[in-house]
Image (cartoon, rainbow, N blue to C red; front, side):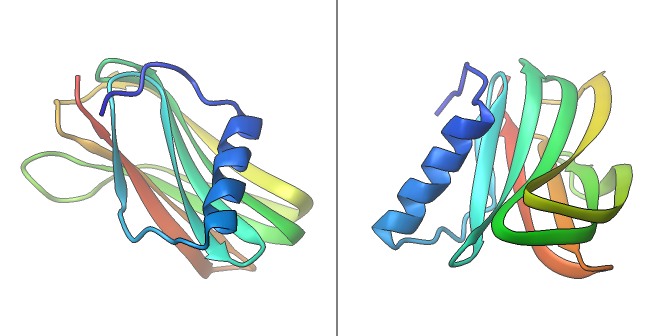
Amino acid sequence: MKITRTLSRKAALLGAVTVLAAGSVTAATTSPAAASAATCLQYDIKSTMCTYVMGHGTWVDHVQSQFFTTWAICNYNAWVFYIPPSGGAYGLAWLTRYGCSYGAAYLQANINRSFPVGTLICSKFYKDYGTFVGQKCVGLSG
């Protein structure tokens, strides 16, 4: 599946709400992308974590790690990394924000480089000084 358009925050949140309404939770950690793409997972009944990869082809402009909830999100971090087809995990950015946000929080890493086809671009999101929320990856398909 190739995704060739950028998903807005509202569209991604609507998709997350649709998954919540359907009562299904996916364990998959990757989504293929030939352009900009998003992939999300349900953290709990009222919260969703998403990874957005913005770019074109195998070029990545930036990556956003986002968390949507009805609660406060405080002292949060994201690790943005990639996994090449040959394996391993290589850090691109560690992002931190202190204080609280309400409803939605995001961290963005500017990447501005290309990767081999088949590379996974991932983010891990943490809240409350290190409580792991989740990890989602987008696979670059060219």
